[in-house]
Image 1 (cartoon, rainbow, N blue to C red):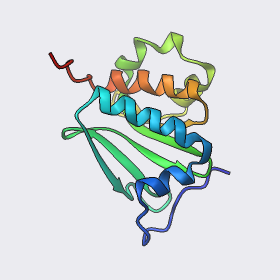
Image 2: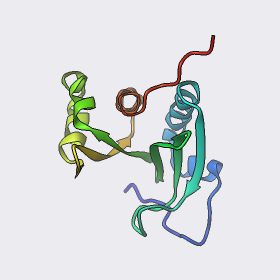
Image 3: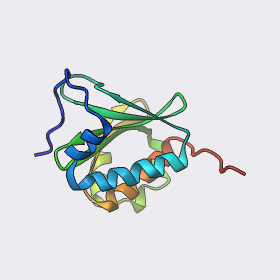
Length: 142
């Protein structure tokens, strides 16, 4: 249903990743705009984490990994690690959907790796909460 681009030999362009994500590409572009406004953004197309993950766009703030966004058929998934203490600050206001994603996260030290599939605009707002708690935003330019 949400198949990923798994052909390691064919490197997709950003436009191809967006096209593959279908209608959610508009939400992905809103995420990218938010990331550009919030961080000193560095982007890299890559095939990380093994053959089952597929192609992603890695977003970093300098040398600090923010997240990977994996293109899926008519969706995309934001994959990132976050500490439990950071999530505790806003956990109560998250949707049931985000609570399930947290519950099913992959334990890692004092946090978890989350696969946050974005299907709706509301999901994007929650992803923003997670990412700004994970990586402190750059200071506003004066």
